[in-house]
Image 1 (tube, one colour):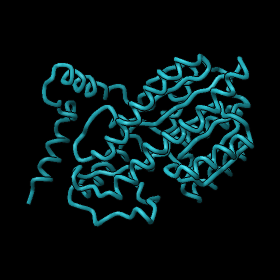
Image 2 (cartoon, rainbow, N blue to C red; image 1 turned 135 degrees about the vertical axis):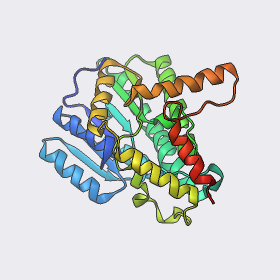
Image 3 (spheres, one colour; image 1 turned 60 degrees about the vertical axis):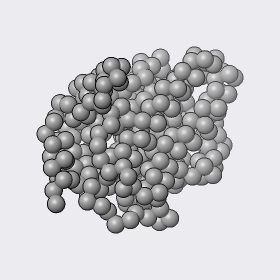
Image 4 (spheres, helix red, strand yellow; image 1 turned 30 degrees about the vertical axis):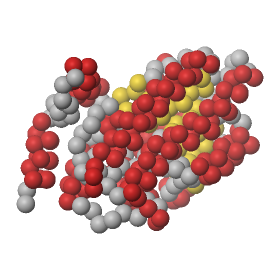
Amino acid sequence: MIQDFKGKTAVLTGAGSGFGLECARIGAARGMNLVLVDVQQDALDKARAEMEAAGAQVLARKVDVADAAQMEALAAAVQERFGAPHFVFNNAGVGAGGLVWENTVADWDWVLGVDLWGVIHGVRLFAPMMLEAAAKDPAYRGHITNTASMAGLLTPPNMGIYNAAKAAVVSLTETLYQDLRLVTDQVGASLLCPYFVPTGISNSERNRPAGLSAAKPTKSQLIGQAMSEKAVSSGKVSAQEVAQKVFDAISANQFYVYSHPKALGNVQSRMEHIVAGTNPADPFLERPEIGQKLREQLRAA
C-alpha cells in the first residue's frame, strides 16, 4: 500500500502524450520528481515546461525505448539525478494493424521494439535499482506499472502484430508480479489494460524510425487504420480518467487496471473456450456487427 507520493521519483515513458502525460500531471500535482521520456522532442519539451511550471523537479530525455543503449543511458541519468526511482511507468506504445501475414519485418521490429522491448528494458534496468534501494531502506516502497492493452487479453482480427506484443506484456508483467513476491514485499507491480481511449496511438506512424520505414499499406492495413481511428477517437473514457485509475491501483496494490471493465465479458468468453478446448471465441462477442463489417470489407472485390 503506497499513500505518500510527495518527493518520490517516477519514470514515465511515452510521457509526451496520452496516459504518460496524464500520469505525469497527477505526479506533478502530488509533488513528485518526474523523469519524462519520449521519442518526440516537441511533445517532450511541452510536457517538461508544463510540469516544471507546476513545481515538479524534472529530468526530460528523448529516448527510443526500443534501443538498449539509450535506455541504459537513461537509467544511469536517473540514478545520478534522483537515485533509484520509486515508480516506473513503462507506457510508451505504438499501434499497427493488418492481416498478420502482411506485416513486414520492419513492422514487427518497430512494434515489438517499442511495445515489448521498451517494457523489457524498463523492467530489467529499473527493477534492480528499486530492489537495491528496498534492501537498504525498510521504508522504501516502489511500484512498476506496465501498459498492455485489452488486445493483450483478446485476439481481435486484423491487428495481430499489436495483439502479440501486448499479450507478451501481459505475460511479462504477471511474471514480474510473481517474481517480485518471491524476493520482496516492498516493490509491487500493476498491469494497465486499456480499451479504446482517445490518445495519440492511432497516429503512431509519426514517430516511426526512418530505418524501419513502412511499405505501401495493404487493403487490410488501411481498413484497420480507419477502424482504429474511429474507435479510439470515439472513446468515452478519457486518458486522464485512466491515469487516475492507475494511481488508485498503485495506492491499493491492485494488479489489474481496466479502463472498460464491461469489455471483460469478451475475455471471459475467450478463457472459457480455452479451458473447454473449443475453437476460439468471437472477440467481438458483444459487438458482432464490428466483425461482420470487417469481414465484408475484406472479402469485397
